[in-house]
Image (cartoon, rainbow, N blue to C red; front, side, top):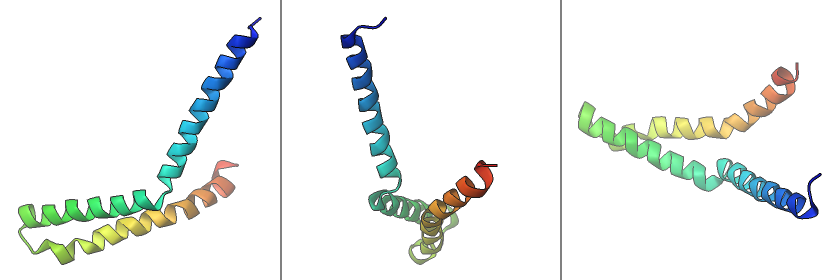
Length: 89
């Protein structure tokens, strides 16, 4: 049988892990993360258009970046739909 000290260590480790998981969940849904994804997507597409395709990228890169942002905003809705109607079958 485990001693009280061993059980306290195990509970402490579980609580630390739970805090890390909660922090990761908060980051995944944060506004900061979404804005950073928007910026990095925009820059990646703009640089691709500028150096590979050779067109003026700064306006043309807005469309895919905004599309990506919209897709991240709608994912929580689809996740809830999936959890309710598909996953629980």
